[in-house]
Amino acid sequence: MADFYESWMSYIRDDVKITKLVIPGAHNSGSYGMNKMAECQRDGLLTQFKYGCRQFCLRLDTRKNGEIVLAHGMSKGDSFENVLKDIKTVIDEYPSEILLLDIREYYDQKIGPFTLRYKADKSAVNDLLEKYISPEKYAFCDFDKIGDVTLGDIRKSGKRYILINENEDYNYSKNCECILPWEKQVNGAKAEHFAAKTLRFFDDYKTDGLYWFQTQQTPNLGTEIGLTPPYKLDEDLRKYFVNIINGIEENPFYLESANIIAGDFMTEDYMKASAILRLNIPKGNVKSEVIEEYEKSLS
Image (cartoon, rainbow, N blue to C red; front, side, top):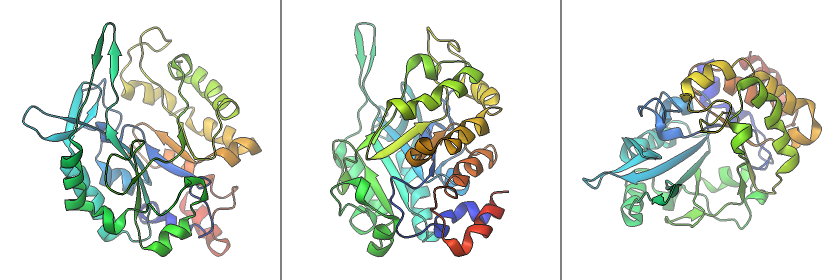
């Protein structure tokens, strides 16, 4: 089973557009090892990759000693350097797989009259990117619209990832059109309510770019779930996860829109990745000669 999740992209047709491919993503990919209110993943990027994830959101900040680290709000985690070592391992050992790397400073947070700002020196980030994952060699950036890019385009170029950054802060990064629906009361609803409400996002939010659909709740004051730790929320939401994915498959418009489907705690088991990747079958993304093998591997 594990081998399939490490190479599932090898089953996908060349002509499938990146925006039409269904891709498991890890929400707050770099939050492993943080405090329980900030932790959304329990394992590092290499393990997330081995569980099928190909889209990673990495938010950066800097420690007082100048080390660039992963951040989730005020919580600081592993070094960015360690993350890049994991990505380098993927580049070196898994030639069939393409990654979407969404990298930027953690966004400014306004708390009452105060604004918290997070900084990671761009030149230092560029130096680390060049040292470990060689963007000049491996970052695919020869496109104007992400909606035009096919998996085959990237394969033929010999590139291995798209480095996504809305300000194009880093060498070879791209400002890709992307939508990330989120509403405080929907994402802050109890599991059963969240599962019933979240599919409405496909009706209300549309894009020709990457559709980043989040399947996790968000702890927040003034919501049904309040400040419940993400791991507690995930324990309950897992009961409804397949219902969310089935709801996407049963609606032709939702299925057509389905693209990046991200969640918390993606390495607890293969359940989430399996349900997400199954959507590539009704979307017609899998090579005809290996559909049976692909489907069997998801069982």
